[in-house]
Image 1 (cartoon, helix red, strand yellow):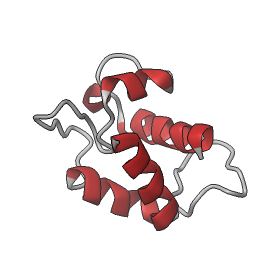
Image 2 (cartoon, one colour; image 1 turned 180 degrees about the horizontal axis):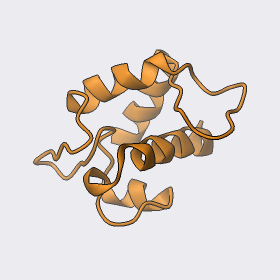
Image 3 (cartoon, one colour; image 1 turned 90 degrees about the horizontal axis):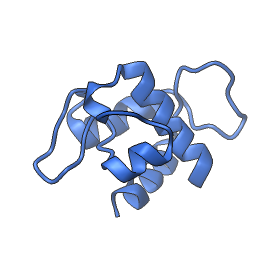
Image 4 (cartoon, one colour; image 1 turned 180 degrees about the vertical axis):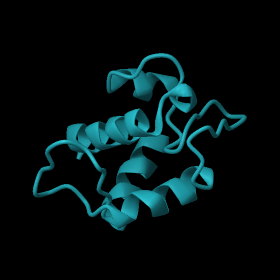
Length: 92
């Protein structure tokens, strides 16, 4: 359910990340900050009591499905941004 919300929010906000190489269909950069505010008050180190972590509130199976290791909230902001964009591109 979180993944579905994440994908809908990314599409609605038109999210873009600062990463090497971007696809023409990637959402714009201003939307990622709004998504982070919605999901985790903009905090990359956020931990929710219901098992979701980091700025994009990944659950562990989703985090691992996009190549994440360890816990999302312990990953760098750049890594979390990369994995969120990867998820967006993977599941569109």
